Amino acid sequence: MFSCIFCRVVSGELPSYKLYEDDRVIAFLDIFPAVKGHILVVPKTHAENMFASDPEDIKATMKVVLDLAPKLEKALGADGINITINKGEAAGQSVFHTHVHILPRFKDDGKSLWGPMDSKPDLAELYEELKQNL
Ligand code: AMP
Ligand code: ZN
Image: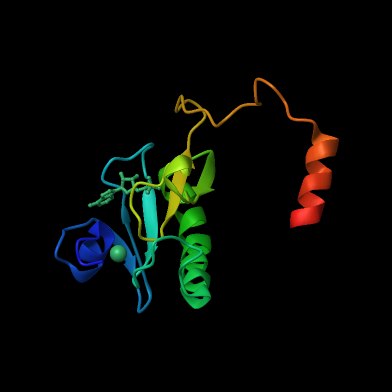
């Protein structure tokens, strides 16, 4: 936990371009931005991912996301916003301390989200499987 990068940002041991802070949450510029204005909103208490965090921390974090995202969009004159959470290595999580990405989007930013699968699963079959298990 003490070598966790975001814990070190929270404690001030590592510098950050901090844009917001309260008792539970901090927000700062992503050091390797995917787009201009990419920021991270992070609960201060360490947990490996959002499902391991105290729901009150998630609530506080999402409140900050809801407040900051439209302000960021307006401040940068962006055309849209992506809000993403990567959970697990397979999903692209590289820092194992809960965080939410806010990504302002610009019509010409050249970034694309995922497209449809090459080979689509049988949706009726999948639906039955999920109904049994969710
Ligand atoms: P994820 O891949 O979802 O775990 O996102 C982790 C994000 O943290 C990446 O976008 C990194 O660029 C960013 N990052 C890593 N170290 C720092 C740091 N010291 N300050 C700001 N952002 C960081
Ligand atoms: Zn941490």
